[in-house]
Amino acid sequence: MRVRALLIGLIVTIIALAAVAVGADFGTAIYAEYRLARTLRSEARLGADPWVGILGFPFVTQAMRHHYNEVEIKANGVEHAVAGKASLEATLHSVDLANSSWLVRPRAALPVGKVESRIIIDSAHVGRFMGINDLMVEAPPKETNDATGGTTESGISSSQGLVFTGTPKSANFDQRVSVSVDLSISGPDRTTLQFTGTGIITGPGTADRQVPEAKKEAVLAAFTKSMPGQKLPFAIAPTREGARGSDIIIEGIAQGVTVTLDEFRQS
Image 1 (spheres, rainbow, N blue to C red):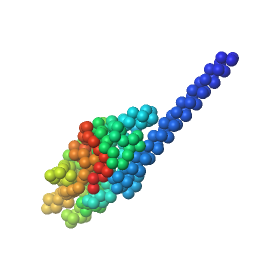
Image 2: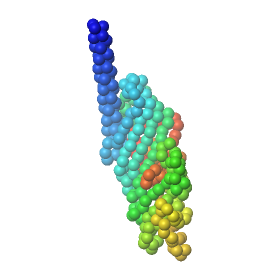
Image 3: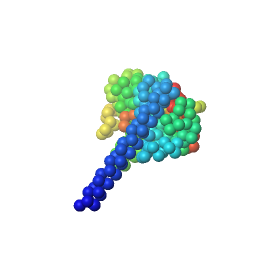
Image 4: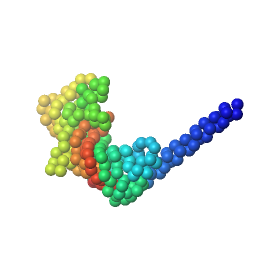
């Protein structure tokens, strides 16, 4: 009985110490994320604290090594000169903190193994830019109907054959219509998002509205626009554009780069 009591006491002590250690690690990670969010807000001229997640357990081990496995950053509703508002996201893999502290100092140069950078514009702001206030954006039908989702790991569809549904009043057409739209990146600095209407779509899951032949050119022109100024966080070059849900996303992925926090917001 005495041995059993000692074992039970030892087990309880170990569990209590483990719980304290986990709690301390969790609390330290939260503090580091808070400090990074505050610093990023100031350095990148954001109107509010972004969401920051420093992933991986235990956190304290990463801090002691001055090396974060993965850092996620999300800033929603950022003022954008062209789109009105946009969301900015970045995922930093293998972040070297040798030139900074574990709290990440302002203006610190951070070598990063891989950066995934995204700018996200919801359908409401895309629609306002196009002059189609009831715009709804969907992934290409072949991908929506694919059991696997037909998208990249980050959830982005292909750039060809997206379904844009709305009322193109600029074409003097006052009924909702669905149009197949291709996305591309253009311009000398590759920061212009090009929308190109390629055809009218009818059938299930669309507005199912025919467009008279005399109106087709004007309707397609209403869905064909150039949106400049799409600079990705940390000035990463775009590698893919498409849809996720009802949002338009431009993504760039780069290996082996050095970033500073003030580069997160580019415009």
